[in-house]
Image (cartoon, rainbow, N blue to C red; front, side, top):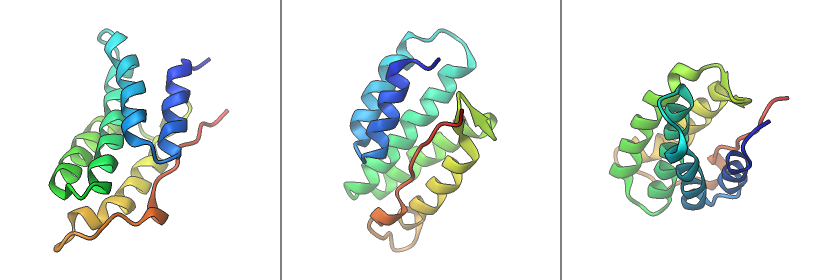
Length: 119
């Protein structure tokens, strides 16, 4: 059984509401004490913030947050809490290519990652 805020954050993320996903997951993250899930949620939060920055043209902030996110999510491969972490990392890497290219390119909405849970 997943915390409803985890699911709500996924819904926000999938609608492209990255700041809202960040807010919901941050509330959940703040309540966690010293377990691996705290790091996992921090990685999700940072992925959402990276996309938020990227969409707003803050390419440096987007690239930095994506790097932090990848560091935190990588240990949870291939999946954690029902989320395909491998798929998220691959989709984020494709989406973030424009932010780290020279010169940076605007976010391509067709490349936005979508999160889904496995049963």
